[in-house]
Amino acid sequence: MQRWTLDIDTPDWQSAPEAETACTALLNGELVAVPTETVYGLAADATNGKACAKIFQAKGRPQFNPLISHVSSLEAAREHGVFDAQALTLAEAFWPGPLTLVVPKKKSSPISDLATAGLETVALRVPAGPVMRFLADRTGRPLAAPSANLSGRISPTRAEDVIADLGSSLSVVIDAGPCAVGVESSIVGLIDGPPRLLRPGGLPREEIEKILGRPLQNASPDMAPEAPAAPGMLTSHYAPDAKMILNAHEASPEDGLLSFGPDPLPGAASARAEVNLSPTGDLAEAAANLFQAMRTLDASGVTTIRVQFIPSFGLGEAINDRLRRAAAPRG
Ligand code: TXA
Ligand code: MG
Image (cartoon, rainbow, N blue to C red; front, side):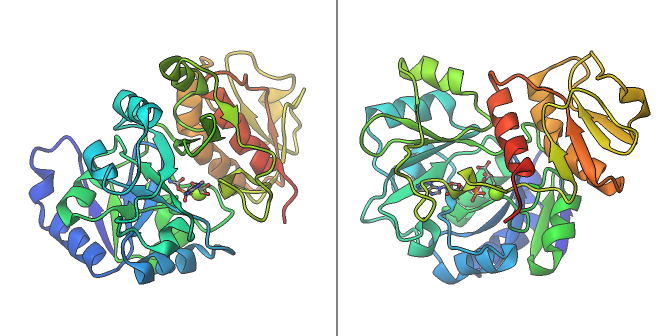
């Protein structure tokens, strides 16, 4: 495994020899860990079924869930998906950015069945993180990339996290420092019927609704667990080793404490370990710190993590979604 440490502010980072190495690895069907603004992705050539199979193998995913294909522009996305007026409106408003659109797949798209799990729809995203866009552009391939963690584990927001989970499966890890957003992209389904929020994420629901001029439906109840529209929506996921207690009313000297905002819970000072997601109560800062905070508390050796109340508006919806999943009974 080669690690490419990259300062995105350096002019001409695209001409580094490591850029060539990463592109060659992708074109050879190998796996490359790539930073995005949301989380680190485990990327492979989406048109290469064998390469996509390596993603599932490396993550230890129990099922072939459909993957997001990352492209460098809306124009590139339109080679793979059918964009109706609403899809175009959202893409033009929010790409590049933390939004994934699930749209009908074009028959002519070379994206492999394994990347779409054989569905007639495709999940597409133009990330704000420039490295993924660059790689998709330079290789000329859509890049399938789920979060670069073992299945069911906490999503990675730093290269170190990726290496700890998946180092042995990777050809290249591109380290561009911590991810700015810190939770996965919001997923909107534009299939038939009204637009649906399939997964809350780094783009707040309210911003999407404002541009659409209508409320987003939630994932429909007939999306049974056997055929979920976004399997990331189900039960235990993003799990730390420690048990999680949400909306705790007080801290405990035996337990870890995940705080939020300026007002400490009773007993906070005596918690065995504490991380405050955002001492000022800023939800964007809290989202960026969330996964790393769970790792830190886990590493402190506590067996239970108590979590202070976090409001559910804006990015709070995605934060609470990930916390509920981390607290869900382990399957
Ligand atoms: O921020 C992100 O979205 C990150 C970074 C790396 O871009 N990627 C990510 O990918 O979170 P992943 O594979 O962990 O999540 C993909 C989600 C899954 O919940 C999957 O079910 C859903 O997208 N998905 C993919 N294709 C779909 C489709 N055709 N219909 C419905 N849901 C789909
Ligand atoms: Mg994931």
